[in-house]
Amino acid sequence: MKHLSWLEAFLVSASMLLLAIDLYAVYSGDDSYATIHYAIPLMLIYVLIEARK
Image (cartoon, rainbow, N blue to C red; front, side, top):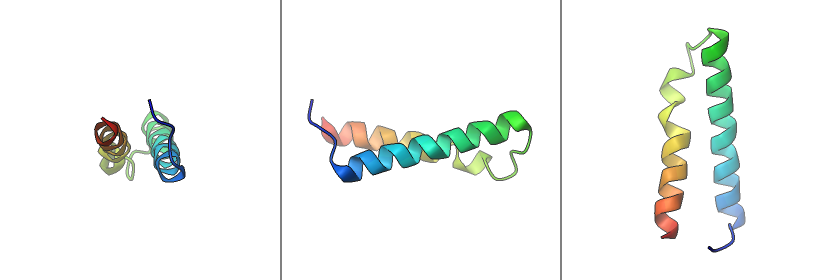
């Protein structure tokens, strides 16, 4: 397994932050802005993992 570059590390942390905000918004009941963002962090992580293979 290769080490993460700074760009990959930034993308992963940004994705995790987005996902955390989305989950908090959904569980707090205010999902007016969160629903559209659900797929974005997961897709970013998936693309990163696929690109490293």
